[in-house]
Length: 262
Image (cartoon, rainbow, N blue to C red; front, side, top):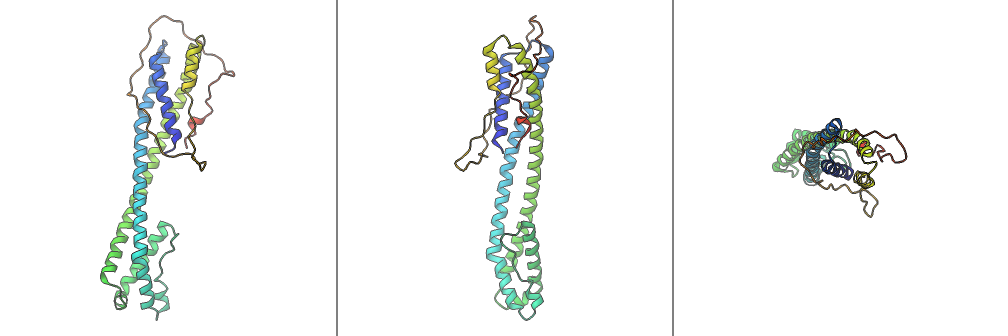
């Protein structure tokens, strides 16, 4: 998971704390703040779910890689070499006893491995007479079945992870839109309080992901502090409704970065 998503959720949690400490006097502004908290409450479990699915997909992928390496090294090449030697009198059949290249895709590997098993079973007597044991062919078939199942699991896991990630990105986009409204509200009501305005401006900044010695951004996610959702309190004082300032040099740094989720 990209660390930028983590930092955005951490920023949203800071905004939530701030607006709870400084509730809105206007009912409509308080309603926008409540919607912001609801969106954050939806995004936080999605973040954890996406991270768990990412780990699960990685584990399944490594399992499939192990199965493929074992199938290639211990079974397929033995079957291919013995089969090519046993059927050397028939060039057409012997040409089918070839193992897939090590750099082939998983789909190409599965197709070639299935074809090799099929021809080996068709000429099983010739292969066993040249040293291939029946146990080796049975192990080959069982390993291929496990690899096929792992491939299906990997595809399903990646699909689920993509769907969850897309939903999470949508929640982040909703938070961004609501944050832009909250920024307008707070810049208006804190225009005479430089301290609170400075605090509000600073807490919304999203830090940059740290880079390692290779220059690549770190992809190890950190779990953001999750705050239980609660409707913000409404100040019922008779303060006049704040005015909305026009744009200027002090506009917030909302450059679309939150909408561009990596």
